[in-house]
Image: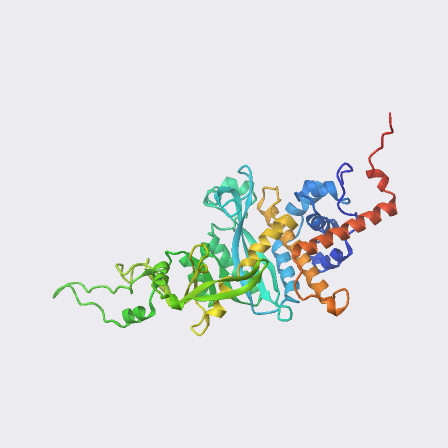
Length: 470
């Protein structure tokens, strides 16, 4: 610890954190790796404005920049195994039949040496910027007794742009493993879903935004896995009417072009855009639906849904054309602001069954917000975007430790709600926001630091010398 820096925690572990980390210590073979893990997690839970090896080592006793860097790059432990064990722990108190949301976030960077960094679209900036892109899977479930939303990250992986996958020397410098293939974000998302399935995460529906829903390969991958999904789509998203698809399938082959001509090839049913179909629906089919209570009151908009097949390839192409595909029948859902309010119309597609009511579809359509909340909280509270190293393994270990710190906050919130302080009449069922739990952790760290100062007389070390008058 740098004596010129303001200390943020005592050299001894926070008891609650030490208890939480106990099941994970078996993943770290050496004692100093276990200690570095605790120090790094503690650093991520402090209120440091930037949480990296340098700043954490300067503010925490019992570690150094070199030890923390070694933890992230050279120590003997597996980030994926840490994810799996953390997920098993979280599943022990999480309800089943939740949702699995897929999304990606950008980590803004300077320069071009950090692994995966490139000029690409950044949701943070709302435009192309120099950044890394990380794809994440998030488990989301409602608790029956409180009606509160519990959510936590399952796993994450960095997306490598083409400028990286095609540059062997660049991959070697960043220690990108040879077995890491060139993958799109959609392929990474499917890989994360497979990981969640192997770990027996009990989700029943996949949620994704239009960045994923517009990709035919992603939707095909979900259907090949027999998964239910609700995805945002663009206004140009292609669909076919079920009755026209059935008619095209039942129609006999077209006649030959002449007595000895070649047989004509069959064509698919007509292709429409989501915008065209929704625009033809009468006003009386739209329903005003409230899906949840927000910080500013009830959240409601108008919705409509109609059964369609998602599809690609116009009727001008033949069925043998690889650019023609008709997917599963499902719900094409439209959303628009209430009368008198401003906003754009949005579109969604879901392969949920035909007996689903619109009131049941809408909460799923609007159910992705927890993963966006995770990104915001993990960046603000746990240093998600503060990693300054350049290596593939270092970034993924940082992500694993950030998610471990975040899951500690989730576990603490659950523990305090299950064992509330005060009479039952004062126990409000509404869930405490995660930043409030983090402030409690910061108070504990400060209390332990003050007690350590007093017990060891270290307070004199940090007291500025006083200069007398004159």
